[in-house]
Length: 105
Image 1 (cartoon, rainbow, N blue to C red):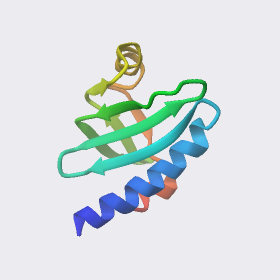
Image 2: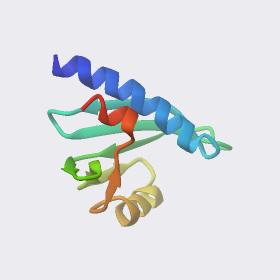
Image 3: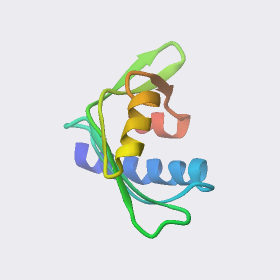
Protein backbone atom coordinates (compact mmCIF):
# COMPACT_ATOMS: atom_id res chain seq x y z
CA UNK A 1 0.00 0.00 0.00
CA UNK A 2 2.84 2.40 0.92
CA UNK A 3 4.33 1.85 -2.55
CA UNK A 4 1.10 2.95 -4.24
CA UNK A 5 0.99 6.10 -2.11
CA UNK A 6 4.62 6.81 -3.06
CA UNK A 7 3.78 6.45 -6.76
CA UNK A 8 0.79 8.79 -6.47
CA UNK A 9 2.78 11.29 -4.41
CA UNK A 10 5.68 11.14 -6.89
CA UNK A 11 3.35 12.00 -9.78
CA UNK A 12 1.70 14.84 -7.87
CA UNK A 13 5.11 16.15 -6.76
CA UNK A 14 6.40 16.02 -10.34
CA UNK A 15 3.48 18.09 -11.62
CA UNK A 16 3.83 20.58 -8.77
CA UNK A 17 7.59 20.92 -9.35
CA UNK A 18 7.10 21.41 -13.07
CA UNK A 19 4.60 24.20 -12.42
CA UNK A 20 6.93 25.90 -9.92
CA UNK A 21 10.19 25.60 -11.85
CA UNK A 22 9.10 25.49 -15.50
CA UNK A 23 11.05 28.64 -16.38
CA UNK A 24 14.28 26.91 -15.28
CA UNK A 25 13.97 23.18 -15.93
CA UNK A 26 11.95 20.40 -17.47
CA UNK A 27 11.21 17.87 -14.73
CA UNK A 28 11.68 14.38 -16.17
CA UNK A 29 10.81 12.21 -13.18
CA UNK A 30 10.33 12.15 -9.43
CA UNK A 31 10.76 8.95 -7.44
CA UNK A 32 9.74 9.12 -3.80
CA UNK A 33 10.54 6.30 -1.38
CA UNK A 34 8.92 7.13 1.95
CA UNK A 35 10.35 4.05 3.68
CA UNK A 36 13.91 5.10 2.82
CA UNK A 37 13.05 8.80 3.29
CA UNK A 38 14.53 9.56 -0.13
CA UNK A 39 13.43 11.42 -3.22
CA UNK A 40 15.21 11.39 -6.59
CA UNK A 41 14.36 14.22 -8.98
CA UNK A 42 15.60 14.08 -12.57
CA UNK A 43 15.41 17.23 -14.65
CA UNK A 44 16.95 18.95 -17.64
CA UNK A 45 17.81 22.62 -17.24
CA UNK A 46 16.65 24.75 -20.18
CA UNK A 47 19.51 25.36 -22.58
CA UNK A 48 21.35 22.20 -21.56
CA UNK A 49 21.31 18.80 -23.21
CA UNK A 50 22.15 16.60 -20.22
CA UNK A 51 19.83 15.48 -17.47
CA UNK A 52 20.62 16.29 -13.84
CA UNK A 53 19.81 13.86 -11.03
CA UNK A 54 19.20 15.23 -7.55
CA UNK A 55 18.79 12.88 -4.58
CA UNK A 56 17.36 14.24 -1.36
CA UNK A 57 18.01 11.77 1.43
CA UNK A 58 17.21 11.48 4.13
CA UNK A 59 14.34 13.87 4.55
CA UNK A 60 11.78 14.41 7.28
CA UNK A 61 8.17 15.56 7.28
CA UNK A 62 7.40 17.62 10.35
CA UNK A 63 3.83 18.40 11.34
CA UNK A 64 3.12 21.65 13.13
CA UNK A 65 0.19 24.06 13.52
CA UNK A 66 0.64 25.34 9.94
CA UNK A 67 0.57 21.83 8.46
CA UNK A 68 3.42 19.72 7.16
CA UNK A 69 6.95 21.01 6.69
CA UNK A 70 9.60 19.33 4.53
CA UNK A 71 13.15 19.19 5.86
CA UNK A 72 16.03 17.81 3.79
CA UNK A 73 18.85 16.33 5.80
CA UNK A 74 21.16 15.47 2.90
CA UNK A 75 21.54 15.93 -0.86
CA UNK A 76 23.58 14.43 -3.68
CA UNK A 77 23.61 15.74 -7.22
CA UNK A 78 25.21 14.85 -10.52
CA UNK A 79 26.41 18.47 -10.71
CA UNK A 80 28.74 19.47 -7.90
CA UNK A 81 27.86 23.17 -8.05
CA UNK A 82 24.17 22.35 -7.71
CA UNK A 83 24.86 19.96 -4.84
CA UNK A 84 26.68 22.76 -3.03
CA UNK A 85 23.84 25.20 -3.75
CA UNK A 86 21.24 22.73 -2.45
CA UNK A 87 23.38 22.03 0.62
CA UNK A 88 23.36 25.74 1.42
CA UNK A 89 19.71 26.54 0.69
CA UNK A 90 17.81 23.28 1.21
CA UNK A 91 19.53 21.10 3.81
CA UNK A 92 18.49 21.77 7.38
CA UNK A 93 15.73 24.21 6.52
CA UNK A 94 11.99 23.63 6.70
CA UNK A 95 9.71 24.38 3.76
CA UNK A 96 5.90 24.12 3.76
CA UNK A 97 4.42 21.12 1.97
CA UNK A 98 1.83 22.30 -0.59
CA UNK A 99 -1.74 21.45 0.44
CA UNK A 100 -2.29 19.28 -2.63
CA UNK A 101 0.66 17.10 -1.60
CA UNK A 102 -0.10 17.17 2.13
CA UNK A 103 -3.41 15.43 1.39
CA UNK A 104 -1.45 12.38 0.21
CA UNK A 105 0.62 12.10 3.39
